[in-house]
Image 1 (cartoon, rainbow, N blue to C red):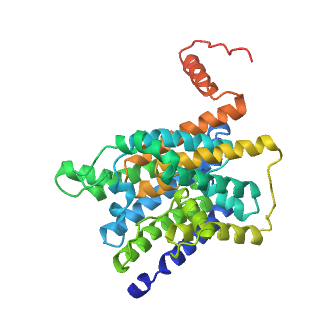
Image 2 (image 1 turned 90 degrees about the horizontal axis):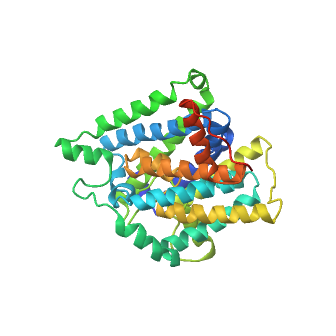
Image 3 (image 1 turned 180 degrees about the vertical axis):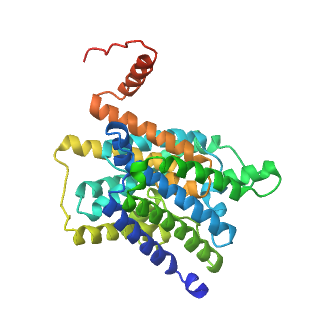
Length: 376
């Protein structure tokens, strides 16, 4: 097995396998962060959101357990080793969330939809990839360095921006498993507090499987990093920069073999396509008009730039970074949720600021004060 892990084809094949499972499960259960948030806010249905958080909690438990036994090294990933870019977490998360609302899904969801025949998602993914490249290496990167990288907080004193490492530093001994247990119990307590969700076995299985796939990514890339003579990035799952890398691999010959992230991106599309074919749900779809196309283009741009600034997406930060106990994860998640709410308010109410008006009306009702609606 170790000799196979040293093969240059190990990572793309492992990513392809993991992506196929993710794509199949996500399409089968309609696993979509944007849809989960929308239904939670507007339909009082927390099933999707609980499944997504279950995926994060499962990934956390599996990953930290594997790290304890020396099989995974999430602390060597860029989620933990890089500085805590708090401005990128906030601004990037807000941009990504708003873009997600305009598009109707995130980068991962776009890949799943592409597997079912959505040409709109193909356009979204191309724009997301190009804008991510610009934010990573192009003109936009110049601004990103000034307002994100240069303002990052250094946690080298603790060994990285992992909650486990920081807590261990102040405790004087390793308390990572204790921190993992506390976080996991808190998340699982909220998830299964809903008696209705406890009966949804298929959703529970989907959340656990997605968490296991993320943990598998940590193991696969850790093995390759230890066995390969080449530099290997330890990762587990994200869908912004890997989409950009996949586009570059498609249009430009570099002489390099695809990495785990590229295999993961391709695998999600294939897994979703298999599910769509099996269930006979393949539908070729395109934008209805220029207005819808422009909304998708702008949303994809926001997701590409925002995802790079936040160092991840709904999966990259919302699940993978959580499994590494990165302190950036909750801040990015909250920022993405706020951005998505702002975008939805704009689409539904005609103004993103209506979300603040709704909040003031709720507070007023609780205090016994009637807050009049402004004329439309």
